[in-house]
Length: 448
Ligand SMILES: Nc1ncnc2c1ncn2[C@@H]1O[C@H](COP(=O)(O)OP(=O)(O)OP(=O)(O)O)[C@@H](O)[C@H]1O
Ligand SMILES: [Mg+2]
Picture 1 (cartoon, rainbow, N blue to C red):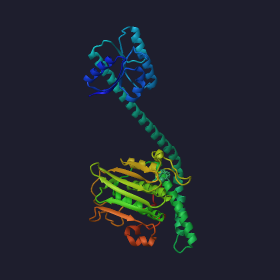
Picture 2: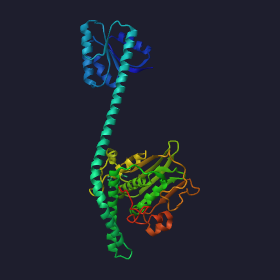
Picture 3: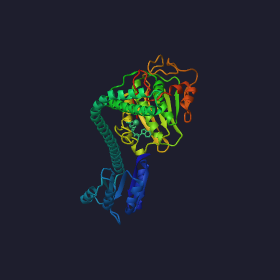
Picture 4: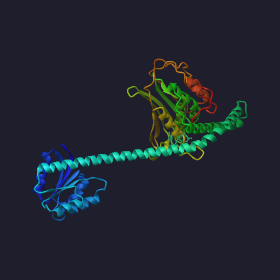
């Protein structure tokens, strides 16, 4: 079948049948016809033709008037070729038809091959026009996105340069506040002092995370890659935030298959990403009714050469209209003083620096899933990874037999001492986040 929808408009039924048969024999399968020019507009709206064959001399409404109607209906940038069919071969008739918007004309009686040739040419021109318009639309969209990215990085660069200086200066006094608060938080202290010290320490930790995010964004350093076990980075982040999650009765389900490839990545940056995403998920669930569940699921797609990590929560969800905005620097829905709006922007830039993508799927009232996909193509099988060794298995070798290491903590009603007797992993997580430190002894980085 030849492509192209054609509308035939002629008050003579014989002419209409003749044209229809001719077009069908040339392979055109989508044809609409009318002998009443007053119906053209309605048929156009319904049938959306790619080309119109239009008689000029008709009762009620002549061809020029129909052309006027079509012109008013169709946007100027759309290209709908109309071939006028006329028995009037005068130059005046042709001039009227062309100035009313016809693309071509044929004088009756016409040669069949000539008509088919003109139809073919005009349909091809329309096809190219449509393709060009589509291409232009996609180029405009690309320009829009790039401009947005550019504005975004300008915004980050300007704010970043300013804030990096301030953030740097804040580091030292913050370390003093945090250290002193930890000294006050001793077991033999008066409970009210302990409580206050804990609050100071938590607030100082949050400031440290904010400062780190600012600095990381402002510096935008490339990843310092090494052999990285994703499971260990994940365990490190969960361990760091475990106390806070348990305090708010969040059930954490970790699902990591055995035999994951070792990634060639920056473990500290990935840690930062996970801490941000998990903290966001935690915040989103805090004001929700229970059950509160955080699922961390890793998958390896060998064929695609990608490792994915889904961070799914049962929180409030994100309205569709802001789902892309949340990745912009300084975009936050949190109350003033609660969020800087830098977490996701930092996460996305880190993941993209690693050649990966960070996406979000969310349904309001149901929950949100952030998905990190990282390339695994440059990876090797685990040998003796140096980064982020797990506490349960310090050599980093996969634990025996089970294909999937799946741990589930349901700590809603348990006291810290109950958790510590359950599994070793839970015991490792009972330390307060405010006192947790990463392996190299530095303070935890990241924060949502
Ligand atoms: N898991 C989630 N569920 C619901 N909303 C989320 C989730 N993660 C992020 N958001 C939304 O995205 C916004 C931006 O997140 P982002 O981490 O960039 O900044 P923030 O958490 O507001 O502040 P901070 O800089 O302290 O991280 C949040 O304010 C929140 O509205
Ligand atoms: Mg955040």
